[in-house]
Image 1 (tube, helix red, strand yellow):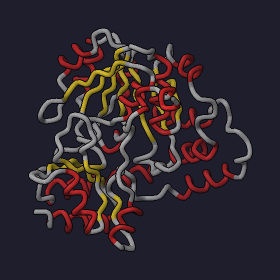
Image 2 (image 1 turned 180 degrees about the horizontal axis):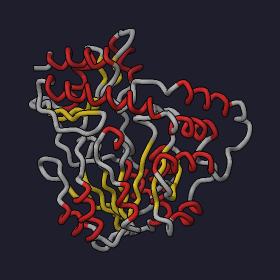
Image 3 (image 1 turned 180 degrees about the vertical axis):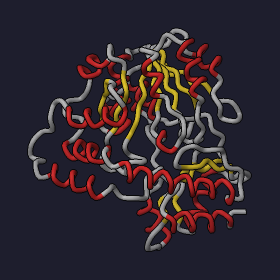
Image 4 (image 1 turned 30 degrees about the vertical axis):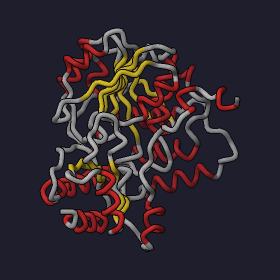
Length: 354
């Protein structure tokens, strides 16, 4: 009887699939340390100024964070210009607020796949009809097919650079999509700092575009959980009404504000990623998809993703099998760019897979 009260989308096994942790691998293999290259993390800790700001805020952790986060919004505007912003507990929190605000049971939500699974999970949790639009064999997006799938939809998700493929949808292709759809487009730019693409000018041209970002990657704040989005002015008050109260904690707010002022840290991180991304592209002895993110997608056929993941784990390298990504054949692994020693160890162990 108790099972019958659980919603159908949660009554069976499923949900977000986490990569096996470095701690699990180390314990299983009897290793003192392992290379953590599965979760697209930044190997560098936050800057000293960011750490100091977070620690200072923690001293007042007995108080709720401010209901209106003017300080961090002002910091965002200093970096990005005069936009309306939605803040959240990571990009996931931003996605949940958007879906909660606009999607009702039975509404059509379109997703370009393979991609980050949380879009579909959040939409299904709201009772949406989720429609997947497969990417082309080279992982590019066909704007015409995407537009056609969006007819009658309420919301669509498009990730660029895309997770797990790493490719970028050209700005003009996004513009074509926006010209052809009536629904809201959520453009996930979680990895945009590692790319040359810039979609921010589109926010001035279209009032049905949301551009989501995170400080988990380039800003080294994955464990702090701070996400934000550029949103249309007309939608901002409705998003605020639907948002979870005090969703962003005081430490995250303070750390994000400080991190936004530290461009030198971002420049160093991006330079590191670009250097190693080029080496990965040329030195990995398997086909590697072109990437503008802080990770690469590797075709390890004839092995499956799980087989390659397990063999690399035996050598102390944790990578992500892409078997769980809808629409992606089971022959890929995703490997993020880590610290120098982690990357060198991976290149050594991936050669042994041949």
